[in-house]
Amino acid sequence: MKILAASDIHADLDTVEKLAKKAKEKNVDLVVLAGDLTVLGKGLEGLLKPLTNSKKKIAIIPGNHESEADIFFLSKKYPDTLYNLHQYSFKVGDVGFFGCGLANIGPNEISEDEVRSRIERSFNYVKDAKRKVLVVHMPPYKTKLDTVGRNVNIGSKAVREMIEKLKPDKCICGHVHETFGLEDKIGETEVFNVGPKGKIIYL
Image 1: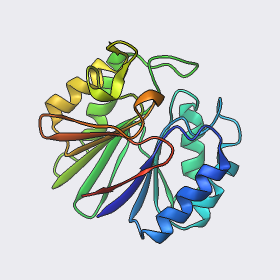
Image 2: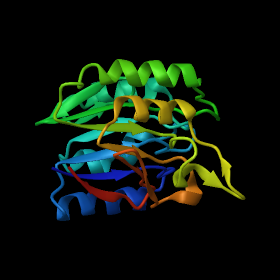
Image 3: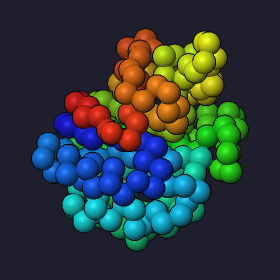
Image 4: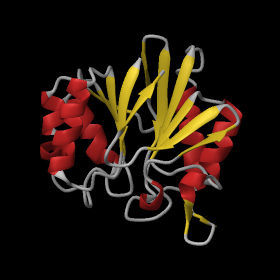
């Protein structure tokens, strides 16, 4: 299975058009969008048009710039194309996707306790899948992906705890602009800060 994962587009329509073109050229099975697609939730549906028009399946979570309601209503409008992964889950073949969006700062803040419970709740529906992918907005704490400045870690301790406990095969995140494109590992889990340019990930 081949997916194209991206995050932190921040209302850049040109970036979305490039992602839609890449998804088509690489013939990906799924597009994963790991939050902060807009600036304060404005124009989300129009921004995603190049991707929804491409007929590719899309898994999506809110970042700290989108609300839960933004993503929920959009997924209801495109039920055959767009899948809300914020505390929900779904399977594509033998791969289970589960997740939790929002962040620990900004207008759509979420507590670490909520992150824990929502990830665990969504995981329960895909725990029997052969391979599992966790999609979050915040990177796990104390990794290459959450380090800014002089070794200042701004990631989520709850995300890290859930990776250590649930052991997904992959974790996709964004949020920290300084580490876009970097990868790390927690145990056997590969973790990717995918950023707006996007990354092809094989499962």
